[in-house]
Amino acid sequence: MTTRPTVFIDGEAGTTGLEIHRRLAGRTDIEIVSLPADSRKDPAARRRVLNEVDLAILCLPDDASREAAAMAEGGPTRLLDASTAFRTHPDWVYGFAELAPGHAERIAAAKRVSNPGCYPTGGIALLRPLVEAQVLGDDYPVSVHATSGYSGGGKKLIESYESNPPGEDASALRYYGLNLEHKHVPELQVHSRLAHRPIFLPSVGAWRQGMLVAIPLHLRALAKPVAGPDLHRILDDYYRGQRLVRVLPYVETSKGSLGHLDIEVLNGTDMLELFVFAHPGHGQATLVARLDNLGKGASGAAVQNMDLMLGLARA
Ligand SMILES: NC(=O)C1=CN([C@@H]2O[C@H](COP(=O)(O)OP(=O)(O)OC[C@H]3O[C@@H](n4cnc5c(N)ncnc54)[C@H](OP(=O)(O)O)[C@@H]3O)[C@@H](O)[C@H]2O)C=CC1
Ligand SMILES: CC(=O)N[C@@H](CCC(=O)OP(=O)(O)O)C(=O)O
Image 1 (cartoon, helix red, strand yellow):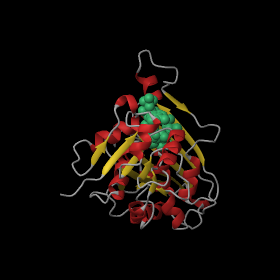
Image 2 (cartoon, rainbow, N blue to C red):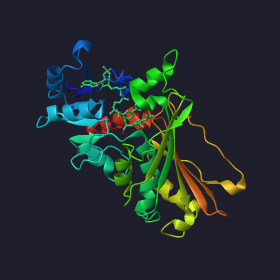
Image 3 (cartoon, rainbow, N blue to C red):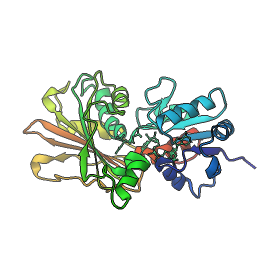
Image 4 (cartoon, rainbow, N blue to C red):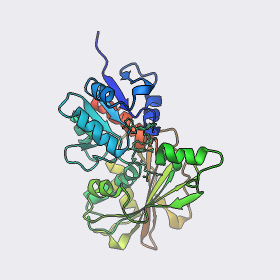
């Protein structure tokens, strides 16, 4: 009889932890280890389990993740962290399997993997192939405009939107991160391989889940003389054969075709869709990523990384 790998979800009662649980329900190739509800925040109980299982998935606030990683330091347990704490840490492998050729294998071999942020998943997926192709110079002044369903804000923001009456945070749509200090900027810059900090303008609104990430480009400012179809071909080649990243057909906007994208289309899936819109006459393009912030933007990516790390099928 073969033993099944054991998996502990630290923070299993939170938004990301519950979604991972839901995705793993019914899986017979792993064994989920849980703490009783009354000891799920007990440091001694967590330390014990964190050193017993094959893989621990940390779905905790940053400080609690750092604390859990310290508890598991030196032990045999492999860690997959959903927080922002280690996403640019040199000892941790960034958990975006489609980042570059061979990257899924790096995740599979790693002892420490950091699951990407939801917004950077879209931004990096669009930028990295163009930087690698030296079409987008690493010094291009990148701006990323993105919008997310409120579940991206975790339990507190969900309660605010779903309580009756709604909390004061529950606006129809609001910009935030206007201090240009959003926690996702470092990973967006590092893993896109940009020389300078991108400007990142996030927004959140009154739908539960679903995310769009848009990057406008002036074609004349690119490092090579390329047109919209070239940008599309680079992305299409880069992600060919990937199960969870789909590059949609090129859209030449001057031909009056598709001029809008809906945000909730991928909800409940782990898919990431990439679009290139360009207007040759104006020399302008918009790259867009669409995803479910709780899917490929969080729990879906975590399960994909878990499968890679444990050598289970599907990844
Ligand atoms: N929501 C999202 O779309 C995404 C979130 N993330 C990241 O995942 C992590 C979790 O986020 P999210 O699920 O949204 O957050 P939530 O606030 O929904 O859940 C966090 C969970 O961690 C528990 N917790 C807090 N401190 C401790 C501790 N010291 N020991 C044990 N458990 C603790 C909380 O307990 P209690 O229930 O008592 O509050 C809660 O259940 C964060 O780092 C976030 O940045 C990543 C990608 C997307
Ligand atoms: C709408 C909203 O508040 N979103 C969160 C990001 C959610 C997310 O996925 O970020 P992490 O992966 O880093 O937790 C924010 O902007 O802080």
